[in-house]
Image (tube, helix red, strand yellow):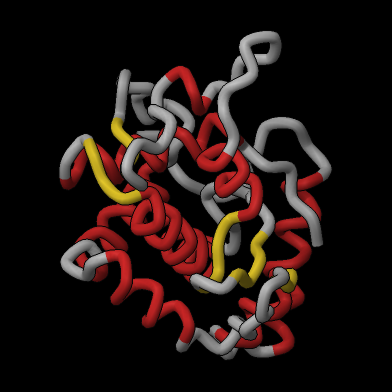
Length: 188
């Protein structure tokens, strides 16, 4: 199952997290919070917020395309939405440079983000690395990376076969349309 990465929603979710705690934080902690939020959104809403793909790296599971945005310098010929609002890392930290708002996030998604912040923001980045190493879908890739599938996450969440089928159908539908409105939420 491959969804269409939503850079706008991902940027707005990242900015939302940055605004809730401070406008600057370690990017490793941010990417862990985004992963945990996507995992919760899959569990409760049947769709991830970012629609990113996931991989296991040495520091645990990450959102693949979001990690690329954090790791790569902006391309002036092809500016990204992300780089309009979030700085390049400096001393492993990123800052919110402008507020993109939350217009693409629905109310249920902001609630998932709030719950994730409430549950995990007190942990430092290394505690979050340790915590995400304990997730059942994570497998140590050594010096490489391993994909984490939606099915891996659904199995880790102990979804029944019927629940998995319903969620995967919802994701297939969402992937087949340009704008994902199938998550049954009211926009914030």
